Structure formats: structure tokens, C-alpha cells
Image 1 (cartoon, one colour):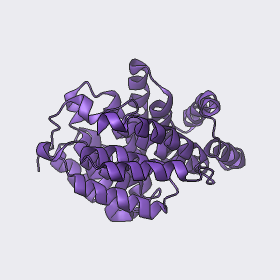
Image 2 (cartoon, one colour):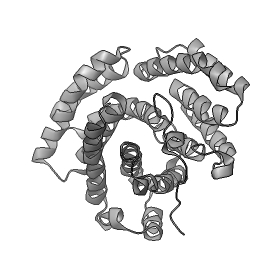
Image 3 (spheres, helix red, strand yellow):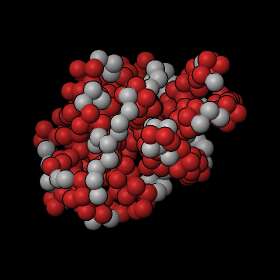
Image 4 (cartoon, helix red, strand yellow):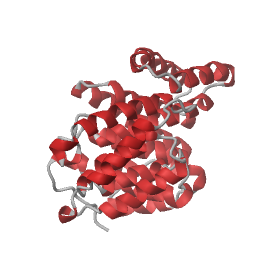
Length: 301
């Protein structure tokens, strides 16, 4: 099977003031921070859990932005003493990916940070599964064969790799060879859905929804496939994560020019109670983006 290419303008793939891939990572950021506590030594678990809850349930983005770099350095320092710990490597990949997507605007810095995140993610996969150490250098068919061998116990490290890879592609979108690797991210997320579609509240479905709606049908996009993934993500998450509806509206409803669905989804986001334990930061960001999309709807439709 040949690796799929994405022959369209970069603006259409990564469009809008906040890119769609970035929006997904904002959601993944708040979901995965909760898991980071379990990657730290037992002596630090309670402190890390408390910090995690404080971040997840904070509705002030500036406060989180100011405190996040200390978390990055903390994970780096733990890896300094234990560089082959797959759980710590996953934590590092996750936090660097999320921090870059949410807060880093400088393109050169974003490239450096996502390079580091992706290296951490591949190192985590290698530490977890030594038979996967050549994954990065494999051809596409060999890559698919590697991924097909993974089982449900490999889902956490596989998801970390897929999300870090998507962020890396975003920051390297001026390189068409990097953009072409989106098909590898799609392969990863499809495998996660096969193994455990409920992982991280159906986040793999959200990624697949985005990937299916990056392009219009005439250029190979599959909007109805994307819609089914968005709906599944909503069902699995029980609609607690408001960012799913924002991405659904921006990716699918705008792509097929469904103004009614677009406005309904965004109005539901604005009417929803954002103060859901564990999702306050995510939902605060979702409501901000929903307002911006509705304000610009007349110009779009």
C-alpha cells in the first residue's frame, strides 16, 4: 500500500486563527495531564496529582501558561536520571506536545519543541517495545505491518506517538514530506480505534474526524466518514468535552456548508456549563473559540 499524499494548499489543511490540529491538542492536553501523575515516582504522586487537578480545573489560561514551563523542566529532570523509562518518556512527549500547541507562537521555537516531543515519543515506543525501534525509518507498508502487531496494552504509548507526530507535522507544514506523514498518524489512530476506541474519551475518533475532513470531497476528503467519527467521539465522551463540538462545527459543518448544524453545535457549546470537573480549562477555551466562529459565520456562509 502506498503512502497517501496530501496535494492541497497548506492553508486549507491548517486553516484558521487556531489550527484544527492545535484545537485537538488543546483537548488532548487537558485529558492527558491527568495521566501524567502516574508517570512520576511514588514520592511525588500526590504533589503531581494536585498540580494536575489545579491545571485541569483552572479557567485562567494566563496562569496555566505561566506555570507550564516548570512542569516541562520537572519531567526533563526526572528523565535525566532515568532516560529509558517509557512512562516518563510518554509524559515528556505529551507535555511538550501540548505546551507547544497551546502556547508557543514562534515558528522556530515550535519546531524545536515538537522535534523534542516526537523524539521522546519514538524513544518511549522503543523502550516499551524494542521490536518497534526502527519504526521511524520504515517504509509505509512496513510501518503498517509494525502497527498491526500492537495490542491493547500498547495503546497509551501508541496514542502518545500519534498525537506528538500530528503536532510535529503542524509545525513542519512548510515541508511537503512532513505533511505526507499525516497518513501515518491516520494509521495509528485507526489502530487505536480497533484496539480501544474509548481511550482518552474517544480522542482517536476526534483525530480521524479531523483527518477525514481536511480536504473537500473533490480532493479526496471524506466528510461523512469524518462526521461519523465526530459523533462517535461525542457519544463516548458523553459530551463533557465541548471542544469536540467546536472542531465538529469548524471541520465538518463548514466544509459541507451546513449553517444549521454549524450554529447549533456552537450554540450548544455556549449554553453548556463549562465548570465540569476535569474539563474546565478545555471548556473555557472551547467557548472562546465558539464565539469567534459564530461571529464570523456570516462572512463564511
